[in-house]
Amino acid sequence: MYSLTTHDIRVTVKPVYLEEQSSPEDGQYVWAYQVRIENLGEETVRLRNRYWSITDAHGRTQEVRGPGVVGEQPLLRPGDSFEYTSGCPLPTPSGVMVGSYEMEASNGERFEVAIPAFSLDSPHQRVSLN
Image 1 (cartoon, helix red, strand yellow):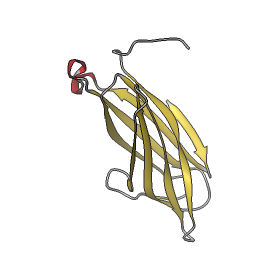
Image 2 (cartoon, rainbow, N blue to C red):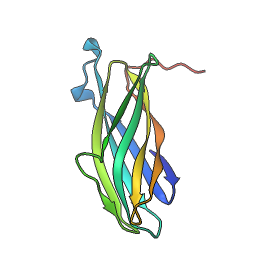
Image 3 (spheres, rainbow, N blue to C red):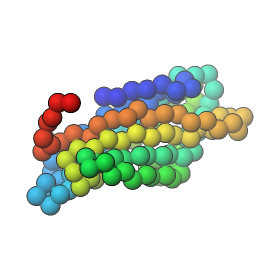
Image 4 (cartoon, one colour):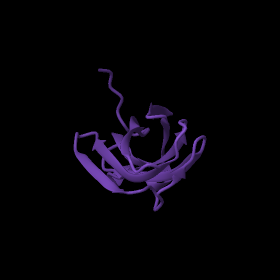
């Protein structure tokens, strides 16, 4: 599990390799990642936008931007949390994801909340020590 707190918003991510949806012989590896967003502050905020940078084992990076998460722009009052699960396919047996959420405070101010970098590891990757 990976966790990071920015501006009193804690983001925790748990990636899970999906063996049944992956096809290593076809170069397709699939992960689900569970995200929990917690408002530890005293101000109500809304998640407006997401940004992801996804890098595969060959160093190829793709960026994903868009409104909200899983079709929602959740409102988080002090003490609230929001959880969702999404997925990521890669053509390699490992990779890394990192990103951020754009949040909006009740006064209209917008700010970035960091999503911790997390590794996508499958049992099909060759382990090497650096």
